[in-house]
Image (cartoon, rainbow, N blue to C red; front, side, top):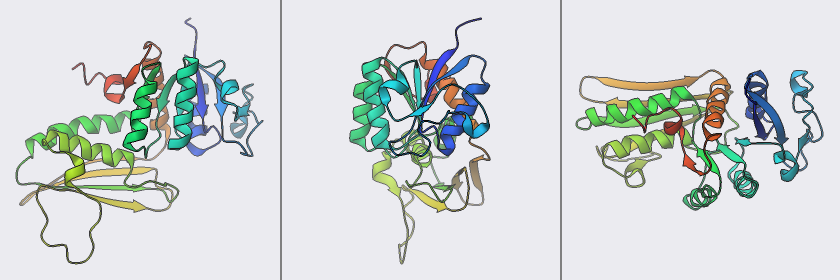
Length: 271
């Protein structure tokens, strides 16, 4: 049997962090090697599996050096500032990094690209395999529906999400815009209020919903004359994000450096 892939989890006491811990513990080819959380977290010092009644022998720590000491890959779904600190530490330690964090500025993305020159990093706004298949479908749909169809992107998330539109919605917009030969920065409309005038057919509209415990729903609407085409993805659990993250971690295990995304993991670029 091959040696298990040693994985550390950032934000280990959060909703997504716990899902990732469970996924690693359930995967026979993976081993939990570290668990990180912010200084002051009440979970510090606890076993990373305590929430599930598991004794993993891995304490939650805010010490990056200790948390990464035994890890080959870190999976990070936290906040941009924390992720950037983790990326610098991973680059220095030679640890691979899977980033599911969203809300990065262009300058922060450039910083991540710099760290990817020293270690392998996968950055994706959504780790779900299903969402990334939808991205592929959107590229094809946008090319076929480039004339006579208005494009709107509707996304819904839980009340705790801090960025809007979601990183996944923006990635969908970028995919559609690129397929149409446009730049999303020039054609996106993020809000409408009052007398807006007729819709500019060259724009891509966004609508954001926040409420309850919605995990994540995304729909891209192509509205034509006499018909509508909707391509949707709805998440009922964070498990899909966790399983996609493990696929990403396995992919990075064979890479020394470089910046990748889920298209690389799923073989879309090779195809």
